[in-house]
Length: 389
Image (tube, rainbow, N blue to C red; front, side):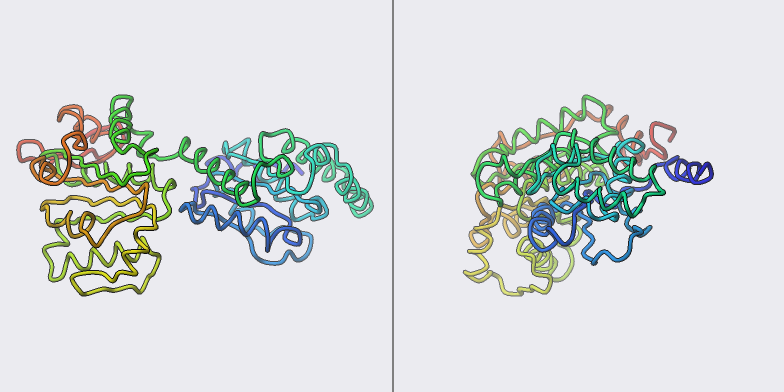
């Protein structure tokens, strides 16, 4: 026992890299083909990397790969259904999730689907029946039984979602859960934002305010940084993109527009990348000057987030985002990053153009996170976080 405990503790000494945004724990026989699969689809639609084990549960021992997936997730959703407690596989998942919650500060959200939270907490009704059978099977493992009971009680006392108290349809209920997951993940993520001090975090919030995210209109916003360097430009657009992407049906980050446009049919290639990403068609390729009316209609129904990175010509903006044959759906947002203000003045209203920070402060921030900036023709780059140059 001591050896096992020591091994478990050491595995959490350094939290594992977070490969997934969300892990879904569920009883396959109850909800695999219904609620849990619909929940998984809703999360994936919001570009949330979600782990869901579709294999049938075999045997009593949970696989190490599944425990690893739990450890590598930022958030776990536990779908408590009628027969959840009848699966030792599920109970082991639950216990491990709560261990990750304590050691790695993983976010845990219980969902009560067809079961009252009090029945989970007190192991009553179907949960009581399940434990009556478990006590016979594990009569020599009282510690294991106690661990499972405590895990159910602890999880049932957490803030979560109760399907019996929902308003609207089940689809509305699932969407509400997905939105809550997105909000919680946004609060805890982006490593880029953790490196921003209060001043720069506020600057990013300011440009977000220009996007008027609550408006159903399509909104274009441009940001310029002068001659401070492409690395900063791309990093800035990338941070905004990841902060906002979960709020849209489809997203596309077009990197290095200036450089790609120099190639033969470069703009057409960029437009094809854009269309494939927004319409979710990996083989889509259009070489004609205009897209078909059907493509236009599909775009007009899609709420999209698009970032055009390092633009240097107004024709690029026109061709990729603002032409008469590329109209995006209500609520869409297009962010344009460039090194010169004059370009943006040709295509955007004055109140939708933003310049980020002064140079000295920007260089200080760049040194903290390793982004190159240009100062009087010289490249300045931070080598390590918060450290030397």
